Structure formats: structure tokens, C-alpha cells
Amino acid sequence: MPRIAENVDYQPEGPDSHQPSKMYLEELAILVKYSIPVFGTHVFEYSLIMASVVSIGHLSTISLAAATLGSMTASVSGYSILQGLAATLDTLLPSAWTSDKPELVGLWSQRMAVVMAATLIPVFAIWFNAESLLLLLRQEPEVAQLAGLYLKWASLGLPAYAFNLISRRYFQCQGLFAIPTRIILVIAPINVLLNYLLVWGPPALRLGFIGAPIATSISFNLVALASLLYGALFVDSTAWHPLSRRSFTSLGILVQLGLSSVGQVASEWWSWELIGLAASQLGPVSLAAQSVLLISASCTYQAPFALSVATSVRIGNLLGEQNARRAGVASNVAILLAVVVAAVWSTLFLVFRTHWGHLFNDDPHVVELVASILPLVALFQVFDGTSGVTAGILRARGKQFTGALLNLSAYYIVGIPFGILLAFSPRFDLKLAGLWIGLTVSLVYCSVFSTWLCVRTDWEREVRKVMDRLAAERPAVKQGAEEAVEEAGEERDGARRGYGTVGGH
Image (tube, rainbow, N blue to C red; front, side, top):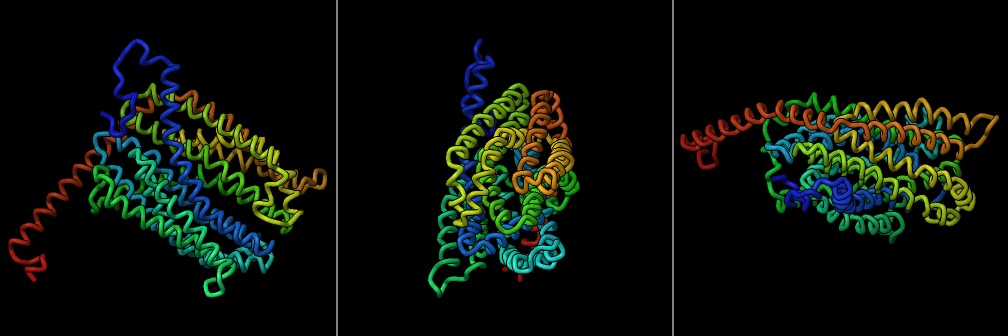
């Protein structure tokens, strides 16, 4: 019996139980059910960062440019790398949960925590020396100084951010999608209040510019604390593996898959930040407009990204249950659903494009520039959505390296060079619009090829690969259990001899 029980798992076999149309509708309902809480989680978590940019944006254009530059630097050197590493768990945890060794979920989560702890050391070094690095990149001194200050205070929330990435996947692979959503629903309003109090509030509490990253850091830590308490007190321990030396073993597998995941996730993220860096060369107005456009596109991307997470979990669970046919159906349904969601966002941008910029900045030049580029943002929504969902399907299959190659070629060989040519070449001189045309070309390329790869997947072969991976881990789990039993026996013997306990001392 599968550990994530869906209605389709209990339906009696009949002549219509395996009809394609029926299976498509069933998987559609399941993916929507999974995606909605994930979407809520990611939107409200992204609001933790967006609230700081919005609150700073109304201080001044220079402050908004500095916050944007600081946020871009944080994304390139920290958040994207951690997200990429955590994406490795999308391959390992869902299939482990529905296998006969669910405790592998806890073991792989502990191992990922070790890998992330080591990764944080160089990230902290970069963030605390960001001002010097930005000056080397020829950023304006005032903007670089404020951006460096932003990163130093934002670093207070970095370990909690890493923990939240792991805990969220720990819950989601078990079908507990609502837990991260409930937590973030409580913290998000607190974050808004903190931003107001620390940036704009009474003089006794007002900190101005640095109040925004401090508020975000506090919020990340509150999310981590709430996740830890909720998991310890209210979640069944079936997926948990006792802490042991095994948490420091098999890290090479995580690093190998993690590097590919970073290549898949971070290469795309970095490309957007490189576009932002290029926009900064066009002046503060273009950089401020880029901030508005990037936040807008990132907000709408939360829907297909949530769908990609739900799809990874669903396909991973089905592969662990050795249900190849339904895994293929779930993959196709996710791609079709991404197109529908993208059409909604495209319509939204086109209808409200002339007023959209006022949500973030009151500068009429920024608002006008945003309105002129939003039709492009609306155009690539379909390709952005499908490429995001297919990336989730590739992660579920353990094909992070393939996804990394796609993104690297799409952005760094095709899109970014083309966009820079359109933006800075005297022949075209399209400025910020040229950069966004290049991004659109990248997404078209990536979407077409990744969709083709997912549609042509041999799902029976994917099931065999998952079974081989789980079989390779079973001896290690058995050895870990024997070590735990042996340690428990030694503790009992020590207690009988009167030492190793408080009473014995």
C-alpha cells in the first residue's frame, strides 16, 4: 500500500480503470491538489524577500538599485547554490518514501544538511566582502556600499534559509504539502510588520535601509524554528533516521548530483542576475525597472515552479511504487497544465501593464520603461512555465546534468549573447528591451528541447533505475541499524556497571 494514499490507489480494477482520459483527469486532480499548497509556500516565502525590496524602493531610486544589486549578488553567490543543492532531494526523497526503506528520507536529509553546512563557509566569505567585489565590477561606490551592507545583515538568515530548503522537501516527499504553507502563512504577515517597523516605523525602532534585510533574516529564522518544532512534535517519525555517523557517509553522491543540480537551477538563476548586472550598466532607471520586471516574472514563476515540485514528488512516488505508466501520464499532464497557468499570467501582464510599475516605484521614467517591456514578459510566460515544469520532471528522473546542459546552452550560448548584442550594439541599441528579447529566445530554446526529452521518456527504464539505487542503499541502512543496536547494548552495559550515566557519576 503506497504511503501517500490517493483515491486512485483504492479504486477497483475494471475495464475503464486504465483508460487514458480517466488517468489524465485523475493525475490532473492530484497535481493541482499538490501544487496549491506548494504555490502558497513559495509565493509567501518569496514575499519575505520582495517585501524588503518594496519597502526599500520607496526610500529612493539609489536605495532600490542597491537593494536590487545586493539581492542579485545574494542570489548568484548563495541562494541559487543552496537551491540547486536542495533540488537533489527531489530525486532521492520521494522514491525513498514509497520504497520499503522510508527512513532513507531522514538519512538523505541529514547528509544534505552536512553538505550545505560546508557550502555556507565560502558563501559567508563572499557576502562579507561584497562591497570590494562590486567595486571591482565597476559598480557605483554608493550603490556598492549599500549593497554590501544589505548582504552583511541578510547573512543572519542564510543558515535558516538552507535549513528551510531541506525541511520543506522532507515534508513534501511524504505528501505533507500543507505544513510549510501553514508555517509561512503565519510568518509572512509578521515579516510585513517587521519591514514597516524597521524601515518606516517609529524613530525608536526605525533602522532605515538595513531594517529590510534584518526583517527578512528574522523571518527566515522564525520559519526554521517553526518547521523544527512542527516536525518534532506533530509529524510521524517513520521517515526519520536516528542521528549517527552515517550522516557523514555517501556524501559524494550528494555532491555529484548536487553539482549537476546547481548547474541546472543556478545556471538559469545566474543568467537572470547577469541580465540584471548588464542592466546596471544602463543606469539607475534601467536597474530599477529591471528590479520590478525581475520580481514580477519571479512571482508568476512561482506557479509553474510549484507545479514542478509537485510533479517531482508525484513522479518520484510513482517510480518508488514501480508504477511507470502513471508516471508518464503525470509528466504529460504537468506540461499541459503549465501552458494553461502561463496563459493566465500573460493576460494579467497585458491588461495591467501601464499601472504595474506603480506597485514598486513612483518614478515615472521607471513606470514607463516597465510598461514598455511587460508585453515581452507576457510573451515568454508559456515557455518559462513549460521549461520550469520539465526541469522538475528531469529532477525526478535524476537527469540534473541533462537539465544543466540545456540551461547552459540556452542562456550562455544563445540567449545572453544575443540579448547583449541587441542591448548594447549601436546597430540595434534596444537597451533593456534587448536583454529581455534575449531571455525570451533562451526560454523558447530550453522549453522546446526539454519538453521533447520528457515526452520521449522510457518510464519502465526509470523505474528500474530507482530500484537499483534503492537496492544499493539497503546494505548501508542495515549496517547503520546494526551499529545503532550495538551502541544501545554498550549503553545498557555501561549503565549496569555504574558509569556512563548521571547516577553512575
